[in-house]
Length: 76
Image 1 (cartoon, rainbow, N blue to C red):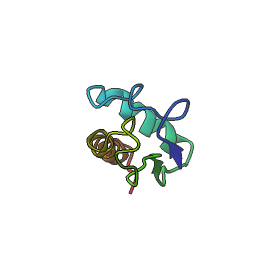
Image 2: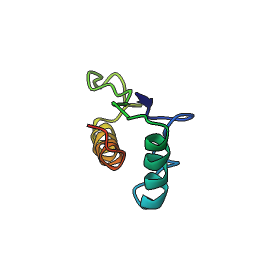
Image 3: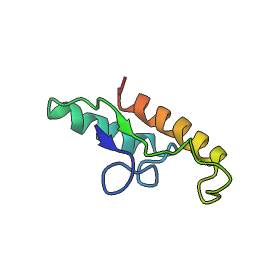
Image 4: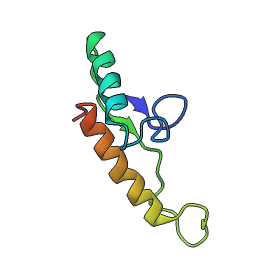
């Protein structure tokens, strides 16, 4: 499991528009005989109007971006 934020695996450091960087990470993981089992997203879909600092739409977009990253890393 990788934490999907810094210092582990941030979308800021492995953005979708840099597929080569993602491929390099996947190769590194595989070269060490490892597999990424899951990405920890740390979202909060239970928050409501009392937490305007956690916008629902942003969290949905974040999950979609993490799903693409997980796919690039062969994470089931």
